[in-house]
Image 1 (cartoon, rainbow, N blue to C red):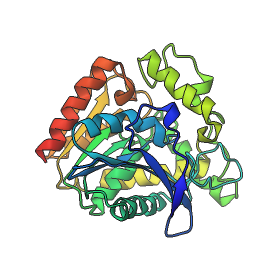
Image 2: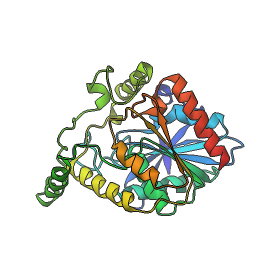
Image 3: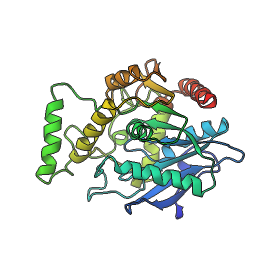
Image 4: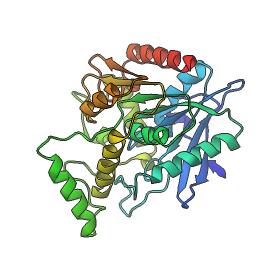
Length: 310
């Protein structure tokens, strides 16, 4: 375990923040981000989305610290400053979606080894929401879960869905699974799209911050996913949607202008989750915790109330 870069200068995180290099059980090098808090009795784990990285959630960690929680997160394999898995480093890729659970175990082990309190709950955003749901289905010992626009389904038209299954599976058969998935960009969305009518946030300052972070640390950039990643994501979403809802309280936030993940899958899963609450966020896009200050403050207050009640 050695120190890893933590770019405090590009984010608004707690002063206690630092990062470590850790090796997963299969040898992949991962970057772990930690924000300990003196006197805290619980830790919240943040499961970031595809293309994301530790520094992007530093302001969320600051809000949770202000409420008395220690916080820990991770750069998933294939993104952030963790090991990239294929020769095209800007392409999102994973060999098997279950490999992300090896990353989860590494994160949990690091929290313990660093003397932080046990994880009370998790916050899973987008792809992190898919990974998080798998974690709790598999018995992760937390008391509750927060989700933000969880990727429980891949957004595409019904007409394209059969083709996506066929193409993503055929790509592996023909040895081209690392090819960029159709309809995606090989560079970061943030750096290639205008703020106007973007699908992430209504807040121009947050949009600028996300772009500035990647420009300041280009190694954080990630573009679209590989066809193999798409195959693995389709398989995992299908599996978690068919699994019984965990007997665990959850609060899920979803913008009513969601255009990144399949919102219908979130509604379907939440309808079948007796101990879950779906909180629709009016006019919000995908990144509800990176929305305008008023919305962020409201949602943070609700999230903290949920955590405190566990």
